[in-house]
Image (cartoon, rainbow, N blue to C red):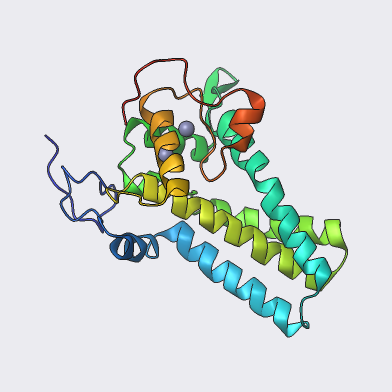
Length: 221
Ligand SMILES: [Zn+2]
Ligand SMILES: [Zn+2]
């Protein structure tokens, strides 16, 4: 058996058997979540983008339409990034196999789904991803207030993804039907069939693209 590790140490496990400090209530889960690098960056980034938006004036219908568009688009990105990027095979460059760090982290996440430090978006990704996100929204809207709305809404959608994914890996037991469905779906992705059930917050793309559920019989939740 693995020795128990303090929840604040690098490589800490969320498995309640190995770490009795793993969060069992929603409040404890949130306090731990809010201390992690990616959620912290997303919270600060979203708050700054929304402050920037209100500094530029009051949002209108165009802002609402853009935010709704991001929410509608998100399931496609969540599914495609998980299916094609995070589960990609190594690429051989000059005889050496190469994989981006986010992909290596996802492999570690599958090897140890309770390990806290490889569960979230790699913090180094924010350095280049944030300017790219701002640039893409500017190109899409050619308008700074809408760019601020787009960045804020997109970071909030990412934060919701990080929260839902993290919660499925804590000992917290979901109560709502909505969340329980996602909890079971993601645990089945880990423990039953890694090549299916790629949706985390949204299950619609798995259904639409034929990767929902498993052909194997017995779920090991
Ligand atoms: Zn996971
Ligand atoms: Zn996966």
